Every structure is written in C-alpha cells, then in structure tokens.
Amino acid sequence: MLVYTMNGTWPCQVEFWVMSIYLPFGIALYQANSTVLRHVAGLQKRFSEDRVYLTLHGTSRAQGWRKWIAKWDSLNVTEKAIYGIALGMFAQFIVAIILFVISRKFHGSWGIVDHAGNSTECRRGWEWWPSIVWQFAWAWIYAPYLVYKVRGIDDVHGWRLQTVICSLAGMPGSPMWLVALYSPAFQKIDKYWAPSQWFVPGICVMEACVIFVPCWHVLKSRRLQKETLDILAEWEHKNDKSKGSIDSRSTHVRSATTVSTTGTKRSEMYTMQALNTALKTNPMPLLCFAALKDFSGENISFLNHVREWKEGWAPPTNNRLRKPNGPKLLEGDALRRRQFNLAVEIYSSFVSMQYSAFPINLSSAHHKELEAILDGPASMINAHVHDVSAIPFATWDAECQIPGYEKDTTSILSSSVSDDFSQTTAVSGNLETFRNLSLFKLGNRLPDDILIPDSFGTGVFDNAEESIKYMVLTNTWPKFVSSGYLASTTPRSFGENIKHRGIIGTVAYGISQTFTKK
Image 1 (cartoon, rainbow, N blue to C red):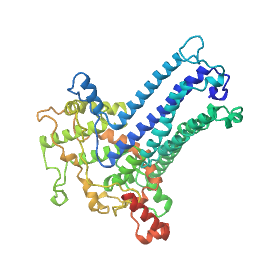
Image 2 (image 1 turned 45 degrees about the vertical axis):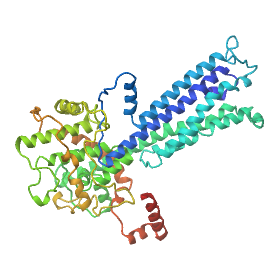
Image 3 (image 1 turned 180 degrees about the vertical axis):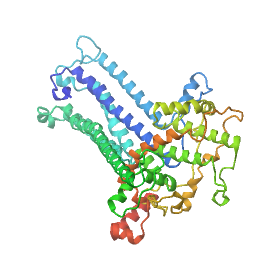
Image 4 (image 1 turned 90 degrees about the vertical axis):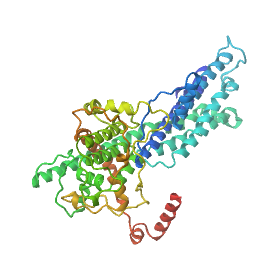
C-alpha cells in the first residue's frame, strides 16, 4: 500500500515486483482459497444425498512418465484447478525474473534492452504486459467463472456473498490503472491520485470482506451458542424442580411438561430432546441444512448412521415393521461380525483421518479409542482401491426439504414434548426410506476369518456420538432453528400461503419455484 500511496518516491523496480508478483499472487491465492471452499460445498452436498466418499490413497501401477499422467487423471476438477493456479503463479514468477534481468529500466548498469529516462517512462512499456495479462486473467476471467459456479450456494456463513463482492471489487483496478497510465485525460488526476492507487479501493473492500465479515460471523455464532447454553441451563433448572436433574449433554433427555406460552415452546426447540426427535422422526431437513448451508453435514450423517447401526443389534421382530430389503435377522457371532463390518465402514467414512473426506471433529482420546479397534480393518478395505471414488453408502431415495420443496407432512417437532417417542406422529411414506439406510446393503469387504477385538461392542461409538451430538446441539441446531429453516419443513396449504405471502406473493413464489425446479 505504501508503494501505491507514495508513487514516484519508491524505486520503479520495487513497483515492478509489486505489480508483477505481489498483487497478482494475492488475487490468485484468494481465488485458490475460494476454489477450495467451492469444492468443500460440492462435497458437502453429497451428504444431503447420503453419498459418503472416502479419501483414497491407492497406488497406481503406471510407471515412468505415465505415472504422473495417472496421478493427474486421478485428481478431481477442483484439485486440477488448484494445481493450474499454482502452475500459473510459477510461470508468472519465472517470466517476471526474465523481464527484470533483461530490461535496463530497472538497473541501468546492466541488461539487454531499453533504458527509461524518468520514473514515468519506467512504469510503462512491454515489461509490464505480463503483469497486465495475469491481472486480467485472475480478475476478469477466473473470478466471473467462480462467481458463476457459486451461484447455487446459500450458506449461513456468508461465504458466497464474500466471494461475489471480492470478485467484483477486484475487477475495476486493472483497467483503471491502464487508463490512468496511458490516457492524457488522466494526467491532472494522476497528480493527486497515482495510477497504481486505483487498486486501493478494491483491495480495501476485499480485506474488509475477508477479515471483518468472518470475524462478525464468529461473534454471531458465539452469541447464538451462548444463548443456546443459557436456554439449556434454564431448561435443566426447570426440570430439576419437577423431575430431577437432567444433563443437557446426555443423549437421553426426558420430556418436560407441555407449556402453552410461546416463549416456552420456542425454548423447547433448542433442547436435546428436540434434536433427538428431529433425528429420529425426520432427519432430512437437518441433514440438508447442515450439508448445504452450514457445511457440517458429516456430523448429522454420522449420527444417522450410528443410530441405524445401533438398531441393527436388535432389529424389530414384528414382520410388519420390517422392510422387504431390510437387514437379515442374525444372532450371536454372525450378528456381531456383521455389525463389526458396518462399524468399520462408518469409521472409514466419518472418523478416519486417512480415509474420510470429512472426518468428524473428535477429541484425541475418543479418536484413539476408535482407532485402536477399527483402524486396522479399515486399512484392509481401503488398501487396494485406487481407480474409482468409493461410495460405501449408496444413494438412497430421499429429497432435501428446502424452502419451496416441502414433501413431508410430518413436523420435525410434532412430538417435541411427548413423554414417549413411540407415541409420536406416524412417519410418512417418504421418510420410511430413511429407516433402512443402504448401510445394510453393503457387501462384506472384510475377510470372514478376521479377528474381532474383544473391546468391540454395542457401545463402541457411544462417546463419539455423545460428543458430536453435543456439538450439533450447540452449533448447527441453533442455526437451524433460528434461521427459519425449521418452519419451512412443514408445508402450508394454499390458503395459508396467501395469508403468509399475499396473493401476488404466492403466485410469484410458485412461478419462481417452478423455474428453480426445472
């Protein structure tokens, strides 16, 4: 910034390096970071479809130069974009060094071509062309492409808005710099506002978006988390008087007495009981919100799979409650072996730092506890896979319930204050597809004679489940409730839509959703 604001005082060669390396590299690194975030958003979307991908580390059989081609082919589109940006930055650096060495503008005593008579002439010429090309490439080609790619992301962190604002803010600098350098009409303005200072407004906007907006979101998230903890403490205090102490971190929270006040009902939405009810009766809206908006879909997906895995230990004996494609009724060693195989798949997909694309955030103690039991078998099933993306949990037929796409008639909290989950409103047909995740459709990828550790049992995931559930309760769940996403999961009738949006609003909303679905 000092080079820009004190233009003419600083040596020309310093400005050359700033304009050729520092500024384009900064823009390129920001675009690379945004590309990674776009990749994260794309991977998180798979959780909303129940597609859990592993990070694979197989070894290619190709030799020599074909080995590098095979490695390149194994990369996804985003990884190739990152390597492309890095390669462009390297080429830019080499070109800048060559131009600096051969031009006498930057060192009059040696060089091959040209020699500038004054500071103004030094800042013009063919030596600056590569800098101009790279600035336009990052700001006018890749940035609009990135904005187009993130158009469908609607996250609660404001990342898409930051990306759009920063991309637009970086566009005017380069053309204004060129106009100020070469246009005679700008000579009077150049006396008070140096040509390179046209980058300053865009840089200030980008810095504000990259630094202050995330800080504001962190403070907002902490405030919401504190409010949630206060609500949980108040809820626990009330239940202490009537039914005894209730641990808000426990996965078994007893229901409280139904209260008719609006404030109390809203407080009930933030409790562990409400979260448990949502996970048990209709987890899809929360899963979609976490994956598409909060980028924490791995937590909800992990809780869903662990719950189904635990139910597999004691499947329903009533044939009317069993799905035709449900798990076979097993007993004894056969049941334990099947559950061990599924536990290894869950560990590989959600816990392992080596094989999971999105490992859940566990403490070191809990992670080592699972690693000691399941990491060895996990390495066996992932050792030789290298040519395709593993999908341990195939896609299951359910849709994200986002605003305007309501498919279910069951409210998430239809029984948030019920004393018994068995008395909840019956789950509708499309939610029954969730009852039997494709977890049970997996083939046995472990040897039949593999030794199952004695420490393996029904409670192997208990500590991890409790930790992740508390994390969801204090982070994702409050955002889910306060964002209004909860209300959108219960469809309104046509009359209710008119009352809520008005006639014109209802018609406009219906038309917009029709085009969106197409």
